Image (tube, rainbow, N blue to C red):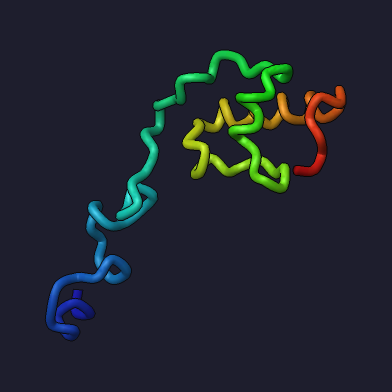
Length: 94
């Protein structure tokens, strides 16, 4: 593109259309579309040690980016945390 020639140099990641830099794979590295994490089968709401790993110090659910869970496991974790809070096993705040 003329934009790259006018600047005189390598493409920056905003200007070009390289697969190496563009899209969701990008410089940070993306997730594989079919890859799932290892604890997707079942998340028990009574297992506090597992639930606390998915919570921040304030008691908020951590994002998928931080926990490295797949979408299905993140939904199971959120449901288990909600059940534990409703039963009184886990507090609403940290």
